[in-house]
Image (cartoon, rainbow over all chains, first blue to last red; front, side):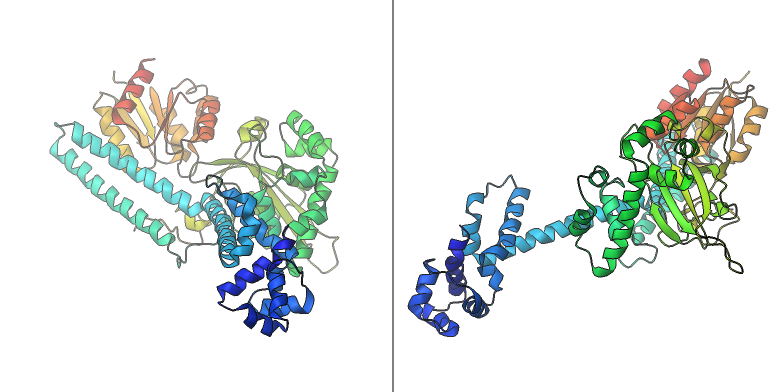
Length: 432
Length: 122
């Protein structure tokens, strides 16, 4: 029993501080013989005496008492489970925590720190996957390497190349090697902690973090295996975040209630995930369908959709980015995206294929809608969404073969379309 | 009469290397880097083979491939896609659009030449 070990914990803490029973008893205002009984778990203590002893031992009373100490025990257990390959004496964790409270706290804290690092690592790794600068730099590296490999093979394998041609190839090699080294330097510079080019993605809201962690599909919430309050309490939110997250979760629940996942998927398969056909079938607006399509289970037989929602100023209100299609957090995207055009054509869906500079293609549906009834003398408030997917082959064929193709980018800084008339910032990887 | 190849690629040094390799094999080689003009160029050049990159300025190579397959005059042409985008989904999209051979960059010169010879023969 943990309770039986309260005295043991007091004794071990006392010994660690090199205090005698007499010293501690005096501070606590009890007799040394009574403290001896307590330390041998023959008497229990609580309240004022426990607080005084805890203060004298420089620990929290909860660390000596039973209930709160359970958290330390749980943390030690979780540290032991994480390292299953080490055969820890897990049946003696409570005894260990009682006898060596300092070491127990150290192990628990280190285990907590590993958890935090793991989470940070996952976020950073996701950020790297979404990072358009890194993707563009990798493309340039591959291109440099292709030229160098092919040209070097020609020079090495053809002894009868005319001198003029051979000189030209050597010049090409030198130029390409210089480009390769510049690109490598750019990448190195980019990953310097103080780099100005880097845009952090770590400022996600708790709701966005929850969605990212669950691949944008909250299965337990949809199947009523988890309640709204259970989700909220699992998130450990500040007062400010609590209300915002609650509202966002309520909107998610509303979406799942109006378009239940199993029914929706059955119908979506029949209509090849075509947003407009689905809106007609469910007799609902395209906006609701776009949000439902962006929050489906992640499976190879279901196309993966991303979404961006913005207001009339282009400020991003909501986003789900894909590994191949990163979205800015605070504006700054490509002005040629059809989502911005849709703002001038409210309620008229725009279908377009986007051709990215790196060859990725996305089928998109953009749709703008007024957010409130028009008022005399005030501009109509409008928002827009763009739903996009790289899995256009799973959509009706007509949707990618007979729709306008737009040559666009992600953001000017990572877009290699140097002649683009919409350019407003320098391409960071441009040849020096 | 010499067999001919059209290269659609935006990296000038890759064009130069490819041109040298294929001319060395006795082929007539023409190239263009602007994807938007690629279809007209192919129609005029009447090549025996097209070598196509995916990442091109203005128009994606994938769109060019779709357009080639849609135009009666050139729909029969073998197309070798040569790209740094070697993911499964890119390969699948290219197959769906009617690619004849899909090769990733960086490529092996000899392997490329062998594929080109085979494709021109058939």
